[in-house]
Length: 460
Image (cartoon, rainbow, N blue to C red; front, side, top):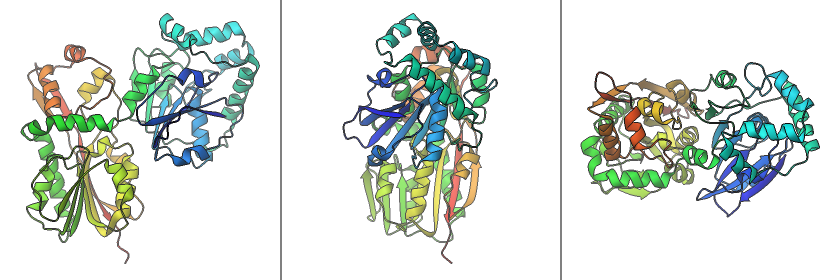
């Protein structure tokens, strides 16, 4: 494999792209995202990958495309590379397969008949239309035909090796309804096991990489900005979030034998949950973290810290808090699993982690129209993230449906509560209003909260 940095500015976060067959770094050279370096892996004639350049990054966002999905899965399984988020784009873990990949006969025909003319046909089929193909040609890979044949042959040998380890733990998958390289039905079957698979109905095999990356990576500065703007209207409109905080508080109390003396709350918002537990308990230490901190009344023992909970928690010492809580915030984390692991590390033995997040049906009406990324995990998936040395005390979920008189009222609700923080909307507000599903003359919005109560095992 070849590795090339197209952006290297000393950032703490890295976007790592495993390109498809026949590519090099040219195709990705114009991609930019503030605060991120960008590196591209390509040429799979040799599967050796030096991962030492990645050691300096706190977060790695992996985007694997086409045959790069399979080669990335092999590379991760065979090295200590551990991306924060792993996203598969128009590819399969069974890349040469009649049901889940490129059909065997088509792959063999491509390899046996590869020529400059047929390569050009492949590149055309990869693109959505003539304009996309014209743009592609301005970034066309500079590679020799013989090495492309060698690369295809190498991929065929790799795919035929049934003894090799392969990573299957993907966070999300993106497939395109107009993919003319991988048949869409095959991609649907290939990713049927992953709930967070979204289909871009009009998309081609070659995605709009800039937009895709902007949609898939959470812009936490935008999250902070949206919540800051809604701070004065949040409490009056966040009836669902208030219900969630109250239910989480009740579950937390049921699991608690004696009030904790130290509490960390990640994403305290306007203090809905904070007010519930501080009215009953009097810990000597309360730490309130938020991307967009709001001044609220807290006990003298309290401290408010502005920052990213995923970064802050890495800095905390072990066995520091007796309780760690978070209501309706974990869906904004890049890696809920890693955050839970760190939470368990800084929790005292016998301590409680009480969190609520959202499940796959959350705001499904909007997802159906916008085709925006599906970040939500099922209750079973969240339970599987529970760190070693911890036990699940309670897992509950519910579906709360709000009804509005119109789609425009739904959008206003989202604005007033600050929950819409996508960097690059795939659908305009006008189109969303026009396409929003109506039921009996009402515009419904589904919330799907999931509650987790976790206890760290004691040393006894």
